[in-house]
Image: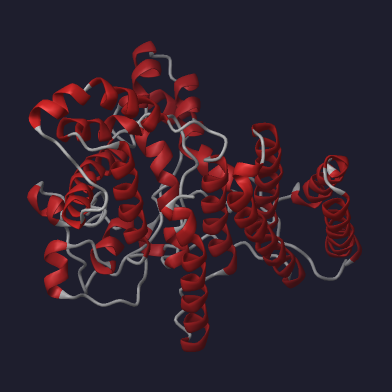
Length: 414
């Protein structure tokens, strides 16, 4: 089991602690819908990782084996038990991560994947867990330079996990500037800048662990007292559906390629600078940016009962996800794929419930029907437990969506 998977319970505990403090102190850092949207994107990212190939290792390991005679001749001898070697591995990995992260903000096709992490209009520890579900498998390119120093795959994996785990704690608004840290490390202050959409802050502070790369390569920006951060992206998602989150920019690029008459643009817009749109496509399908002077967060109003229902469903999905990650090795690929598909469906429908979307009313019964269809595949004990869950959920949703006429829902559409 990976270090990141082992860290998930501690991440969730930290989120709950920050949430409790937020409610106690009245900070206003958390909204239920946005937090569930971020956590759902994180869950989708982890579970899809079970059924998609790890392209980086599929390429890295054969190349490492091919270059082994060179490493032996030069004298590279990395050891995962040597703390100094591990530190150097993290530094080297973070350098590669800096360039991957920077390009992810500068090129359309890379931004389409990374965008998911930036869509939240809140900034809290739940935002840290908002991760993309893979996108096109092209990020491996940036870690190939680690072959030049003979970094073994297992040490690269460990360094990557440390790099990712470190980044969790910097997603908070309640940790002040610590001047000496701002020169060396990524901190909550300089990472708040990275998540802000203010003009002065956009596309700055790309480091994962070390901020020194940004200082060296001209992408550093300090958080300014006179310029409070406005979080999110210029062209907002306006949904808490994790599938919509992952498809947002791919969909926009595909539509641009369809609408533009220029074959050159059809072929190259994917690799142009982030935000590039052919003029004729933009005229046919304008997408307005946020008005930062009158910024309003996406916050559709649904009934209290539906908010509670969505929260309870999300808690159940979280528990099921932890169980799936823990016991994944005991399942064959088909079983993993079925579990991932059913969980993903639940996350998608739950997001649309929080959106107040018009088809959520009927999508939830359809989801429960899909779960009921899977009952014969389970052991009697699991089938009985899942059957009880389906019955209770169906009754609760029928009351909230069809029987309770006085508690109305504000519906939104795509």
